[in-house]
Length: 242
Ligand SMILES: Nc1ncnc2c1ncn2[C@@H]1O[C@H](COP(=O)(O)OP(=O)(O)OP(=O)(O)O)[C@@H](O)[C@H]1O
Image (cartoon, rainbow, N blue to C red; front, top):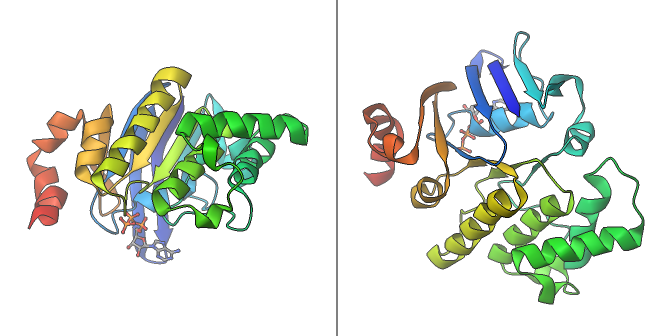
């Protein structure tokens, strides 16, 4: 479904992403890990149209060239994301936030009432239906993260990109979020591409892991293989544990 070949991005003389190839299939949870500055967020930004990668990079989604589309068109094609720092609309209600996902993330033209219906359904999916009328800024951080996820769900996504959605949460909150992410895959056939520093969360949830270091892909495989991969341990897990 998502196919990326030879993706590179430079900032001046710094090669932040360096010739990365990968694919994500339908209904698959793929983790993207690597030390700070490895190029993970930059790679996300090239997929979502925030940054233009270097010439020679190729990114297609269901056969469509994403590099020819702007950020809104990419969202409407079914690729939605959450952000490292949550971006809920604080003064809007929880329901208005979710409904905004339905209004702006699809290429259909829908009524406000239909957007609210889809918003409520997305809130129920993440377990926030009883918070619908609250102002979003009054939600605790774990629920703001669930709300960001609900906003993508309301857009009826094919692929959701999560940027460190587990950071700052308690183990119990992470387990709830991981469960929501698994249900996205299992009940809705949504694919997930997930940047995460919290190893237990990503290794315990993803079907496959891609590891970046200094912009390059240094490993890819099932969580167990990654856990036991020496290059990864040296590059990342070792650093985390020391
Ligand atoms: N807009 C920018 N201008 C210049 N350099 C940038 C820019 N964005 C990122 N970089 C640099 O590119 C490299 C990759 O950064 P990126 O944020 O993609 O890494 P990351 O793997 O997401 O890191 P982290 O885990 O810390 O979020 C870093 O060296 C960073 O300083």
